Length: 292
Image (cartoon, rainbow, N blue to C red):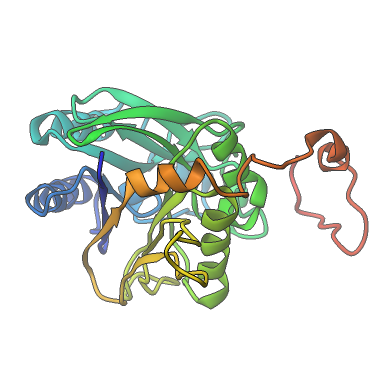
């Protein structure tokens, strides 16, 4: 595989589930025409990242991972021969989850991931957190690639991308719904650098509340043998407008880089990190709304 093309669908949601399904179909077809291997939606596309305060309304707006809405994107993936990462408010007990389902180009469900680090200081306190991170081997027209996923606030925790790297991820897909600015972009850049992975993040464009576009991708390749200095790992950074932004990852170069450089899992000392498993929280980090 020389490269992997991920279409970042930086698009505005509509008012209903069916309208979002139809608009999602339209943009997936456009992504295929542009040569995408994977089309990726922003966070909770099924509801346009809407989390009602009323729990009955919240639960009523959720769909199951095996719903018509989700499965229709699997059928579309098979039709287009293109992988699709569809995001949705997942029907779940006791409360819904913030979820991505990745279908391969044959329409097979390869990965279902629910956001582990829910924003419990905000409206995501009404969602159920996920409990693990997953990696799958994705068969694309360009060849096989190991893909993982994390969602928005997950990027704030180095452990998220680190676990995905340790599970073999070469590319990490990141649906997002928040203002993307220099510090959040820097976090994604760091996650790519320290794990030597490609990271593709798609956000809602300007016009969606509390969002501003700037979908991005980083390839994690900080050094090339022929260069004397480090390089910018940025593959693409979108503007604020609605549209499809293509992230083209040089996968063979990423693999070659991972085979020789010093980051990732090359020189770690896991036995010395026992404190990372401690659950005790001390001041100044105690928060009353924290959920274990």
